[in-house]
Structure formats: C-alpha cells, structure tokens
Length: 344
Ligand SMILES: Nc1ncnc2c1ncn2[C@@H]1O[C@H](COP(=O)(O)OP(=O)(O)OP(=O)(O)O)[C@@H](O)[C@H]1O
Image (cartoon, rainbow, N blue to C red; front, side, top):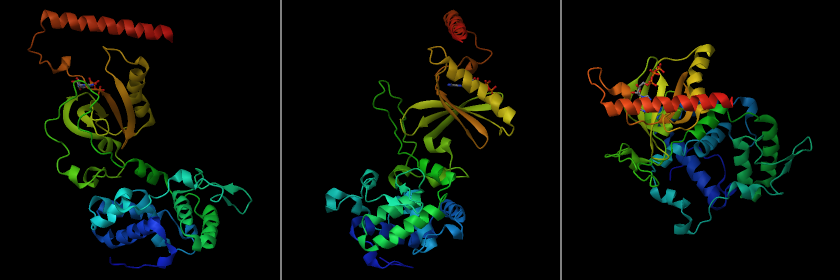
C-alpha cells in the first residue's frame, strides 16, 4: 500500500487496532482527492473550527483532523468503495482470528483515568471529553511504548481541545443513513413495494448516500425517509408518501412549502403538531409520530391514510354509506375532543 506523508513511526502502533487506524488513516489520505465534494467540504468546515491553539502536541495537527474525522464521523469514503477488500476483511474476527477493537466499556478502567493538572480525575468516557480525546485514550491502551507521550497529550488535550467536536459534527455523526428496510416483517399486511426504491445504491453501501443528502449534509428527511410520491397539497404545505428507511413502514410526511423565518410563524405552525400530539391515538384521528424543523420548514411525520375525502372530485357524489361513515367519524372525533377538553 502506498504511504504518503507518514509521520508516525510504525512501532508506535502495535496490534490490530493500530493497524486498522493506520490503514484507515493512510487510505483516507490517499483517497481524499477522489472523495466527493460533500465529504471534502465537511472535512474542511470541520477542520476550520480547530484553531492553532487546539492542536495536540507530538502529533501533526492536520493528520489528527483526518485521522479523527475519517474514523469517527463518516464511516469513511473507504467504506463505500473499498480499494482493497482484504483490508476491510480485517474487521472480521472469525475470518482472520484477529481481536476486535476494544469496546468503549473496556476503557473505563482505573488505568485509563488520568489525573488532570487541577487534581480532578478524568474519565475518558465522560461527556466533558471530546471525541478526539477519546480516540487518543483508545490508542493508549494499545501502544504502551507511547504511554508517557500520550499521557501528556491527554492532559494537554483536556486543557486545549475543549470544544473540538462541534455540535454540527455530532449531528452529522447521528445522520449516517441507516440501511433501508423495504419490508417490515412484523407487519401482518406489510406494504409491498414492488420495486426496490434503493436500486443499485443498496449494493454500494450500507449507510451513506451523499447524492441525496441536503446542502448542509444534515437532512433528517432524506436520511430517514425515502420519498415515494406527493399525495396532497395544503394551503401552506405539501404531503408526501414516504418509506421510513429503518423500519420499512410507510408514512405521510407533511412539510411547509415556504421557510418559516419568523418565530411567530414557527409557533403557529407548531400548533398543528401540538394538537395532534395532545389528541393521542384514535381510530378517527390521523396518527402522529414526530416532527422537526429542517431548513426553517416544519416536517410532520404522520400515519399514512389510504383514503382522503378531499381526493374525491367535486363532480363525484358520495354514496349514502360513505356519507354515513363520514358523519359517524365526525361525531366520534367530536366526542373524543370534548373528552380531551374535560381532562384539561
Ligand atoms: N396523513 C395523511 N395521509 C394521506 N394523505 C394525507 C395525509 N395528510 C394529508 N394528506 C393529503 O394532503 C392533503 C393536504 O393536507 P392537509 O389537509 O393536512 O393540508 P391543509 O391543512 O389544507 O394544509 P395547510 O396545513 O397548509 O393549511 C389532504 O387533503 C390529503 O389529501
């Protein structure tokens, strides 16, 4: 494997984990030129948040950024298109009898607790530590030769790299797309999706589709849902039939058509969500699942109704049965609401 810009002597990294980190680190460097612009932009954006004062001694600062980001946030571009399949097989403990990387729990030992200069013990899994510090601590369990250096690194890290992992980076880590679940096996009459909407993307990766991630890379809508079709329009909104990737169920997602810039606008839009959530589940009320703001638009995830009175064209007349069913539902709904009001 070609190594470019290798700064650390190889004897620093012993064992499988070290090998894995080295491989990932160098591979990321060599493949960075071919990475998508999204990856590159995000890496740069993230890197720009780390100023000189936050760099860690003994290690090259730029190397550290690559090292941390490729491991921690993206599943790495390598994961999508591995250049060397054998290297990826290194993760398979059964195949090569190589021990798996230690679980984070195993690091929570007395040995891994380092005294800070102010005398307070530092737990590497404590939320006050950044991701970079945890990775450095992870390395210390494997590379005894560098124990002293790493100890210094950790202590300095606590002082200097306090807010190294930004909120957006943490959010990005949470937005790794789950593998699609076309059919939920626990649903009796599971919705059949005739064709695989994920098509050839499925073979490429288990989790990250850069092409459909929004401009900021953090689209919850595109990460969590596959949009199938538009099923309705409201006065200020559009409603889509979607497949939730992780559970394989169909839902309706309604989102506002224009950005809600003002706080008052957002509050007003939220009233619909609050009413739906407060009413709870009822057979005649559309089920509410979740809601969120994205790009200043409100998204509401709801039960997908297979029938809508508004879809009947104005020229079509209701049959008597349909009319009675509709009236019955309205009455039940009113009763449900009045019961709810009484509770309040
Ligand atoms: N949960 C759902 N399942 C199926 N179709 C839906 C669902 N929610 C809305 N629709 C469809 O989308 C159309 C518009 O939705 P809705 O009635 O919520 O909009 P609206 O209240 O008129 O709009 P706005 O909130 O912008 O004023 C409905 O008439 C219906 O056809």
